[in-house]
Length: 305
Image (cartoon, rainbow, N blue to C red; front, side, top):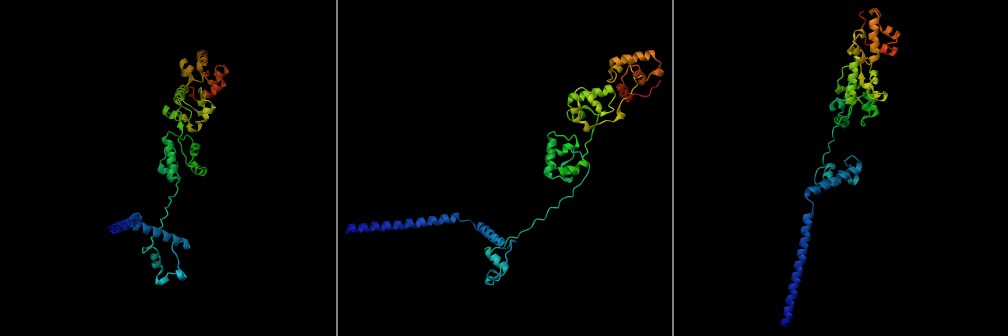
């Protein structure tokens, strides 16, 4: 009998322990669900988004029209109240349309692409991004030596270039006054050729034509074509002279005379009267070639004799 009572107590204890285990397990599941449950604000936003999507799918305008059983009078509730009800008690968010940004009028004015500012490029009709691309090109050492160089920038379309081309103003380099810094900026002209140009200019007395640059050894038609549009000549800057007043060394140093012709001119001056000292007479006496006579005539001052 005692043994049966002992078994009954053991069974009862087991049942109680099992009940507590089940209750504890259920409580743990409940707590986990509470912890993982989104907050009210999240629920509100999700509810609003869901209802807004539903409203937009009804008429495509963001506001639903109710008719029949779905009218604003449904259950005695007005249209706005019905919407508010569907939003879980919250009013539908107000949608504010952003005002269109007014585009500034495009301007047209002369500009040098090598120095024009980003702001001025935007005024000319380029977008800020296009203007920054051009500015970055210049900062990396890029130069616009002729108008057509501006068209080579990938952000400049053919239509944009066609509109701006008449206003592109790239100052040309004047050969008779340019220093070495200006000359080396020319395409294909480095420090060596800049020095050669200045030396030849001094020997000539200045350039009367930019084509004279091709008389310099090393500057051929191909190299000249690369910068010919970027240079100009001011003939008022040339140094005029009279070959009849120059000594033999100065005559020999001139590109259009040379040492052999210089000796012939010196001999001619000794045997001929000064009234006969003309370029034409030098040609007649085979002292000077016709080509060099035409070249020298552009530098000669009127004969004083």
